[in-house]
Structure formats: C-alpha cells, structure tokens
Amino acid sequence: MRKIMEQQKLAKPQAAQIAETITNAVMEHRLAPGSKLSESRMAEAFKVSRTKINQALVMLAENGLVKKLPNRGYFVSSPGVAEAKEIFAMRNLLEPAIIRGVITHANKADIKRLKAHLVAEKLAREQSNRRAIIRLSGDFHMLLASMCGNRYIDKQMAELCPLTCLIIALYDVPNTPACPEDEHDNIVAAIEAGDEAKAIALMQHHLAHIENALNLDGASDIDEVDWEAILR
Image (tube, rainbow, N blue to C red; front, top):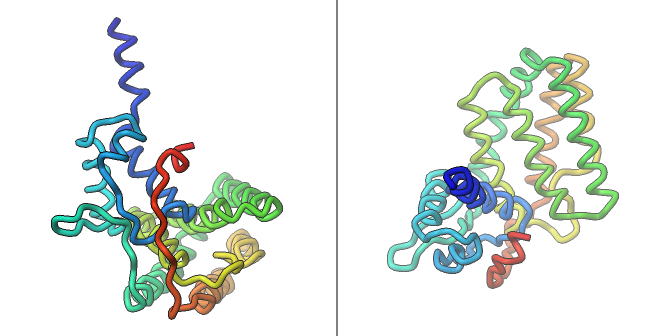
C-alpha cells in the first residue's frame, strides 16, 4: 500500500515541475505576455491543489517570468521596450563570458551535446514547427550557459532566456525566426575550433540580429489561456 501511495504521489507534478511546464509554454509562445494565470483553472488542469499552483507561481515571480498584481492575481510578465533593451544589454555582457567559459571547460561530450541540439533545431525548421524552433533557440543559449563553469551565470541565463522569449512574442515581426538559421551552427563550430574571438564576435552579431529584428512599436493581442491544450 505504501508503495502505491508513493507512486501516486510521484504521478502528481510538484511545484518545480509545474513552474517548468509554464516556462516551456512561455518559451514556445503558447502562453502570451500579459496572460492571466488563474490558480483555480490551473489547479484543475494540473490536478493538484491551489497551494501547489501558488508555490509554482511564487517561483516564477522570483524569476520575473510572472508578476502578481494586487487584488488581481498572477499574470505572465509583459516586458516594456526599456526592459527589453535592458535584457539584451545584460545578455550582451554575459554571453561573451559564457563563450570564454565554454571554450575553457567544455569537453568532447559537451560538444557532442551542442551538435545534437543543432540537429534538433534543424529538424524543427524542416518541420516548420515554430514553437519548437523558438523553445530550442532559447534552450541553445541556456545549454551553453550550463557548460561555462559558472553557476551564477547559468542561473542568470535561465531567467533571461524565457524573458527574451516574452519579448520576442511581444515585438517580433511575423514569420521571422527567433534565431536565424546557421548562426548557432557557426558559433558551435568556432567553439569547437577554440577560436574565442570569432565565437564571441559571432555571438554578438547573433544577439544584435535578434534585437534588430524586433518591432518595438508592436504588441500582441492576449488570448484566453487554454490550459488543457498547454498540458497536452
């Protein structure tokens, strides 16, 4: 009986798992900036208590991915233009350091992981799976951060990448890829060759390409959240 109860407990998502599911939904643009996060509807969809949902939302609020408004509840963050520029400025500071760290610390297994990720990106493009392309593009940068040998930078990038996806959801030009094709490939090739200067220059060009593709005068309409669809 105890074993059965433990299995049932494991079957229910924990707060961290719920937070990760919401983060992935944001990164795939299945949750729009400004979306209302109804705790009761989420509890029903996840089949957990509202307490568990609240714990997940508090985690996400600490990372800036959601915001709690007095007497209104939790909403997916909706970064303004100034905040968007600040996030890109921070990434421009961090990602050269990430490149240097990866070249210093990465081993053959890490390079293999990066190349496998590039294959997944290519497959998503061939399938025209825009949601997967967006998520994998963000994952690429977080994967690099995880290999740089600095856990504080890794943590910072885990917060900045989902926020960048929110910015892209708000301000991107339709049919423009979040990360242009081949730019990730070129960065990995330079890392594998140990060419720090080239890899950093490619990353800086890459980030500028993404930022310059945004329409900072635009905004997205906010639809009702279909939690059942998000959890499929």
